[in-house]
Amino acid sequence: MKNILFNKDIIQRRVQELGRQISFDYSGHEICVIVLLKGAFMFASDLIRSLTPKVRVEFMKISSYAGQNSTGLVKIDQDIDYDIHNRHVLILEDIVDTGLTLHNLLDILYKRNPASIEICSFLDKPSRREVHVSVKYIGFVIENVFVVGYGMDYNQMWRQYPDIQIIEGD
Ligand code: XMP
Ligand code: MG
Figure 1 (cartoon, rainbow, N blue to C red):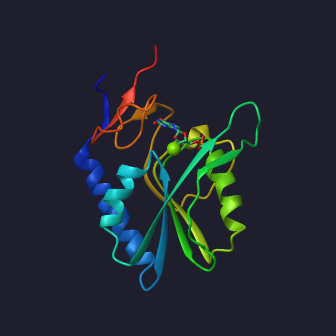
Figure 2 (cartoon, rainbow, N blue to C red):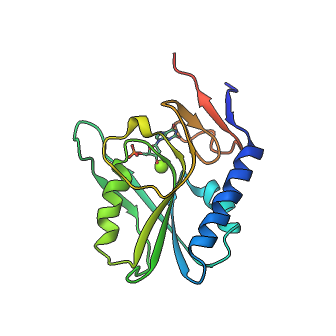
């Protein structure tokens, strides 16, 4: 398995571009970045280093029960210990697939009355979408393939690859 979709140089260039765009959009404001564990950890560490506004970094771990149920459900395994009331929240995610995870997470976070919430996802698989989610910042749009690397896993393995690789189905 070595089917590289995006190599580390292309990834780094795109992440720096995203960082510049986000820094521009939030200039003069403080950002409360919420990193969704585990998948977004590597993307977050690169992106956050390129941000120039004031940044607070929080981590959240959620699991999704998408499946038979069309709306899906999100379980918070680890919550942030910070009140986002009146804060500008930026969620960092590895990949948006059906959209159910983020759709449900947004419901939960909006109840805490933040000033704003935006989503930045490293990857987007729009062909798989089941519910609409507005993702303001996207690294790359991909086809319906399963990818690993740059923080993303298959059965918890292969997160360490610095590039994005496609797992071939059989
Ligand atoms: P939703 O709720 O949008 O879920 O369907 C998004 C989550 O699904 C996982 N996911 C992947 N993980 N390679 C991965 O390593 C993939 O190609 C992939 N597609 C979806 C991921 O956990 C994401 O947060
Ligand atoms: Mg994930």
